[in-house]
Image 1: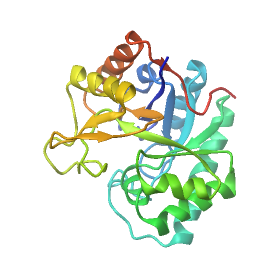
Image 2 (image 1 turned 90 degrees about the vertical axis):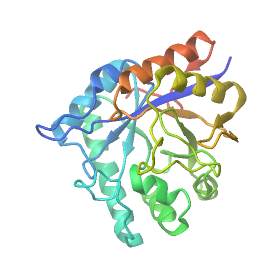
Image 3 (image 1 turned 120 degrees about the vertical axis):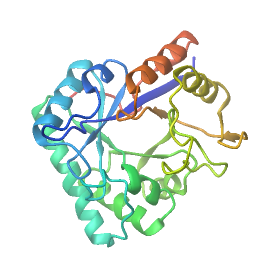
Length: 256
């Protein structure tokens, strides 16, 4: 039987501003990448998401970001290594405290947005994030873009890693994600998305935006919680995979 994790970016509401349907998504996914306040999320909302994740037995990860609330963490930053390291340690620590109060714990780290895309190939910033994770808990798993150099850098530094593929994003032929500024970057057809993910699990390939087959080895599939129709997409992916005999299981475990 094939095995894969299904994750989503959650905990991104802020005050009176509501983002996504965390309660429903936590009944679908096996891992939750929870915002830490730097790109989105406020403490009480994050705590609610963590409490719900604990109730559903969903594994929790710290969704760390550049300090960019206005840009939702999607703006590139040429940030000093020591500053980035401190920011990441701060975010993981904050989420770990809230997770403990919610009856669960942080088991992995997944960078968000521009930070995620930058450190996939920028070795200086990548090592700042790796050092931050090791400084706070070297048993945390680092989630990174499947096929990216970051995976090997993290392994060489002694971290466990999980390679990630995106259900609702288009790919370039080099394995990078199509920029959100370009047409077709975000996928919305639930049936198409589900079929793409089934092929990824079965064959280890995904079709790129220019029609080529890209080989990808993935441990986890992400459906963005802030995408329009996110719940429908996640439900379609889960249903298609389970119907095909694929077991959905968190790569980093769950519970307290």
